[in-house]
Amino acid sequence: MPNSEIAKVIALEEHYWDSEVVEAWGPAKGKQPAEQLLEVGDKRIADMNAAGIDMQVLSLGAPAMQAFDAGTAVPLATAANDRLKSIIDTRPDRFAGFAALPTAAPEAAADELERAVKDLGFCGAMLHGLSHEQKWLDLPEFWPIYARAEALDVPIYFHPALPHPAVVGAYLKDYIQDYPEFIHAGWGFTIETATQGVRLVLSGVFDEHPGLKVILGHLGEGLPFLLWRINHAFSRGANKTTPFREIFQRQFYVTTSGNFSDPALLCTLMEMGADRVMFSVDYPYVQNHEGTEWMKTVSLSDEDLAKIYGGNAERLLKI
Ligand code: MN
Image 1 (cartoon, rainbow, N blue to C red):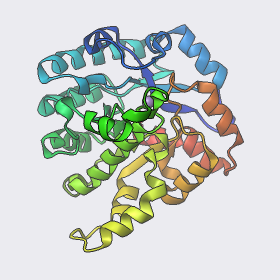
Image 2 (cartoon, rainbow, N blue to C red; image 1 turned 90 degrees about the horizontal axis):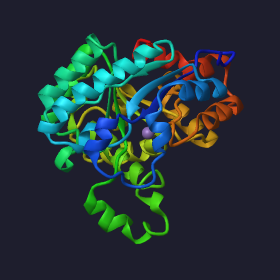
Image 3 (cartoon, rainbow, N blue to C red; image 1 turned 45 degrees about the vertical axis):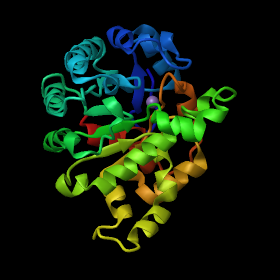
């Protein structure tokens, strides 16, 4: 059996594909590890065993339900979450789940979150990039989802997806041909998701819902590195009483998904503390063994390592 000698190893940003959702997306954009995404059985477990990962919290790959209008997303999210529950039921000791939510219908998305948590036993939800019609997810129309997450005491994981087409055109397109990853993990995802993180704070959603817990991957999408400067800038002529940095440190958690860097981890720990950093891989876009081999080299106390490997996730996700 897998195991670090220190703690249960839980990985939170681990993706799979649901065939019906893939069909509804239409042709995939970019190169995708389709075979690994569609496999949720023995091969996946064997790879987790080889890398020493006890549990994957499964989530759809991007753009999940955020690609769809309400008419498509509402029934598809329910069906996909039910199928994810069946996958988890095959190995409840090894799999948990984040719900897919039909954000184009925010009240229905809130209801689906509640169903997923109460009836299916899911740990929260993952949202990917902009919602249908390129809407930012901090807009007040989406707050019913966050009210429900607060009431249920489950986190919302904000995950990257392709940047807005205007951003691709203005900022990225010149280098896409030679460097296709420029719009994905190479830079575009970071622009998109870091902006979503900043916008969530500025929107005031945490004043209205102080119990809302947000997770960002990739060691916080660069935001821990920039917190001091963002905070300093927003304090000039500020019309808000609570500093940006304080809100971020109070409401956000981050995972190590796809960012196995000692300097970035050190910075993140200095800003966020060891209670708010959680191990993740971003499987299968990044391979399991890359994450666990890196973690074995991280020089921290056993107490902090135990929190990062799985202790924080057990507490936050009630696993
Ligand atoms: Mn991911």
